[in-house]
Length: 125
Image (cartoon, rainbow, N blue to C red; front, side):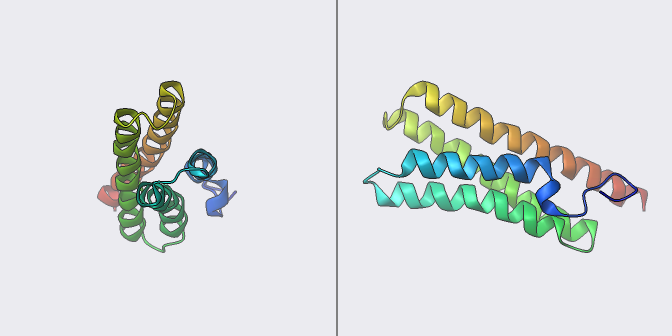
């Protein structure tokens, strides 16, 4: 940690840590699926969350960081949307889907909080 209490590395970000767990959950959940299109799309979207948080945090300006966090948030919404498809297609136990959706929205909430912080920082400059 730096003296201003901000992490020095993306791996220290709670949003990235939770996104990493979410990626593992999705990979385990979809491992035996035969619908390769849905499996691939869901996996790509969840990996996008984790990677865009990491990439965004490495950027030099708040404006650049915002761009990547906005993409990560968009990917959260994409994964959340797909959880409804999983529910509609009855591909997973409803309780698993709800737990997954809650994890996605937790990452979304944390990332969105950081976006609000950055927007405030930009407006103060």
